[in-house]
Length: 250
Image (cartoon, rainbow, N blue to C red; front, side, top):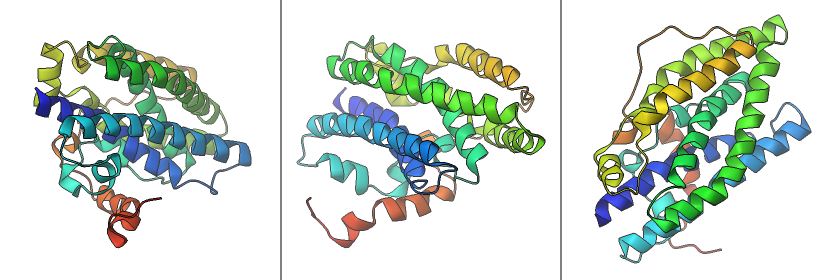
């Protein structure tokens, strides 16, 4: 029970940790000042959620590890985020498409996690829902703005959706920890979110005059610690200070 709960929390938190780091890379590089600040704030929201999850995970572990140790000092194969969130910021359309495809899932997930028998996870979900509701509106608006914009913006957004679609199905795969926590009434059965997820995604893509990808081929592995080549480079930057100056404290 204890180990499954710990692993389950990592499975939730790593998604926000890695996506928050990706968005943080955009600080100072957004297409406009307002958008730059918005992306930075979303990154900070995600890191705030991660702190709550990792503080709880450290308490469960009970081995003197801190939230920083869990966040910064694991090896690449020990991170269990989905492949979607580790994809790089190729251009602004790609960044917003990645955000959108995760935000729809994230909000649905948190709305169910709020019902958890674990009062700590339920409380984190309740607080996070307010933030993620804004994230979903922000990224959804950009999907529609770029998709139904110029020929260039439409082409870039369509290319981004097509390229990232292959990573969406993994959101609904269950790990052993997931199954154990669902059985305990603590975790969310993500398989039950799939239909609603694609319905919501497709509605917004249609409103944005974008084509819904027909590909049935999907990639997976992140939840089992098998990642794309992009994660190693991201972790090298994320972990640099902790590894260069061990036991450093602010």
